[in-house]
Length: 170
Image (cartoon, rainbow, N blue to C red):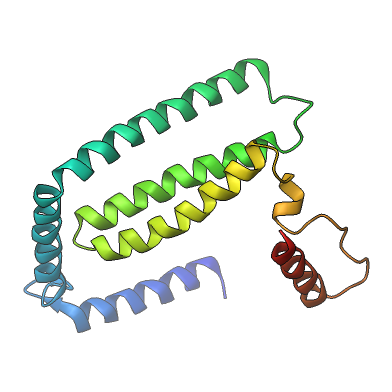
């Protein structure tokens, strides 16, 4: 199948979706638009009811984001510390945590605060992991179950079992 045939096939499939789910000229308009309006209304109620949470979270995210940007600018100018082999992955974990916290906020202000809180639980676990690494309680490789090398020629399943067992030790 050529690229053009593939594009045409995809377009035909999308056209069938439009034919099936258009409502008054809007794709998903029958149910989705009302759901989106309700999500926004619930999100605004959340923002008003938990204003203190919003103030604290917004201030924290601004501080966290500025810290990450400052650190990134430092690395662009001076490079990664050569004597800290796990510095870059740790920095990327912090960056991922920032994005995850933002995702929890997007969920909360769009009508899904409980899902946002569930995701925050995962963030708490990540923070404890990074805290242990930064405070030299456990090395980066050990906390992720990498303290022993993987077995050459082993299957992925065997390696995954070994990593999982090592994480349990941590």
